[in-house]
Image 1: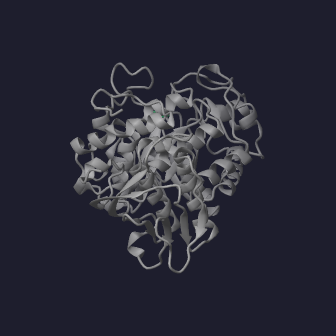
Image 2 (image 1 turned 120 degrees about the vertical axis):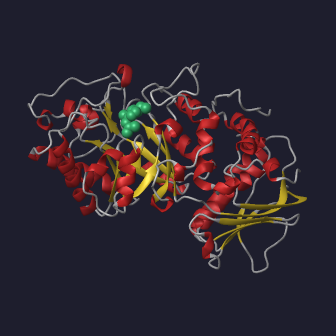
Length: 496
Ligand code: TNX
């Protein structure tokens, strides 16, 4: 085993790491001991066993730790003694005798499990028994994230993606310690979540997609299943209902929502900015109330994203009034509102969050009013932008984003005059106008997504493109093992 940090290839780069040059052998005698053996800690132990057992080719049991824990095992320990690790931090100590993972909170144990996975050979990620000697380098890692919000957004509206596709994306996010999945559930081309009070939204509004395919929608049980799966990976799902623009699918489903009382045909193109709810109409407010109430009931987390972007067909004063009304409805449900940067035109409650995507001004003014900002600058972090002019999928309105452009920036110096304390974190949106399958999603997300995970997690002081590039090169073999369809960017010396 190498003894330098770069030889270990962990992404995101841990905050501190000391390697001691020996190894721990993961033999068929190894079990996972958990302490305390609560359901939650036991489940994390089972999750780790489930990642290692199939490829290692032997059973790994999850057991309750005795007072004097046995050697030659992996220990997961929830320790109340180190609050400095925060919600997601962990300490991993590997000696020739044992692997000890300690965290202040269960989420920290879960993040630390990803580090253990990445310390093992890539073939550990295969689904069937592999030949191999499974060793871990002896080391000490103390690690916790720089930003609280390390997210990805998936547009399931332009093209619909199945529950299984979304779960696969969740697992890939988890592997890089990301902790937020924002689902863009509605847009002009499709409404993807059943609302019981307005069933035609999904039944009709969800019946097609860009290009005219069959579309689809999530039942409320599907959605709850996604949210629970994400929660088991310590990932918060943020539902987005985009309003007042990007609402053509809703207008096509209910004539009563339109100003002229006539429902238009469904739309399967890719234009933006042409639709608007009929702001001020009683029916519209009833719709907002019902939708937000049902979505809030399905949402374990504290946030509901209400879109608010590109409302080019909504009059400015009406836009502001509408956003403030929606904000009041969201707050009345006990949640906080998130919206794209345009919502900064409205009078925001202190708990509302602004998602920067294009211009500096709205983010800055929101920060000056005391609101927190999620950084999603399109020309750096839009996963739907092509890598270069040869990329077969994606768009290019915000430019090409190669692997280096994606990695080599700091969220805190994007918007002049905005303090780092206003930044909740970062989020990488993936709009799906050109994406039809999970394989398309993977191609756009990999290899750029791990760079965003590192920007969100790792301290700025250790940031170094050349070193990152070498660590990233080693992940190609991991994606091969996971059957991830990734873009073999020529700038990276992929290892076999
Ligand atoms: C802009 S980013 C949009 C989306 C498009 C995307 C394509 C934002 C808030 N709105 O409606 O899908 O560009 O890159």
